[in-house]
Image 1 (cartoon, rainbow, N blue to C red):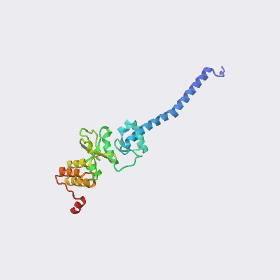
Image 2 (cartoon, one colour):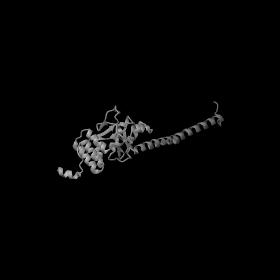
Image 3 (cartoon, rainbow, N blue to C red):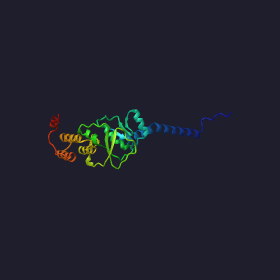
Image 4 (tube, rainbow, N blue to C red):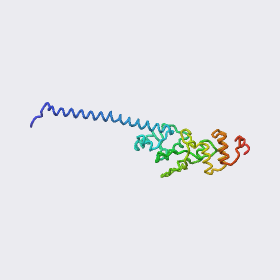
Length: 243
């Protein structure tokens, strides 16, 4: 039996050193480079999506998350971890943001953007009257107006009532970040929806008293929608007389 040669040949030793160097390089890549790259990617989507959510009361859509670089699998993981909360199908909220009074309205106007990112919803009609504290309407469902050319091909949540109309820029304002029709537009929409002269009249009176409507604007609405001569009696006096 032939004895082993010692020391080993130079070629064999060189091959072992090369293999060791390669293994060290691979280990360093796995331990140092990959986590660093992953962390960088995480910071990138987190920053982009957080900035979007900041302007939307902490809410964002699944399509906005994808555009920011966040994949659906990671979205599900974040929901399981409690970092985000699923508000409705395709609409999420960062849990680090506090729950606000108008948060559910923001979720409502974002819902159409899940499939149509270009569509901008606006809270309107009875819901807008409630937000502006005009009359005592307290609708169970949230009324949202979409552009007249939009047609949704998905089931509308029962909590929403969708209207279609082209709103002018002057018809929309933001209340705590939520797009809402202006008091005057909301009252006109309520009249067009046949809510009744009592609600419309109360809304005009409340707007005049609170300053949500200018005096001239309130007078014009009263003439246009109710066909009556504007009355400047204080609302409180009218209430005492009604009793």
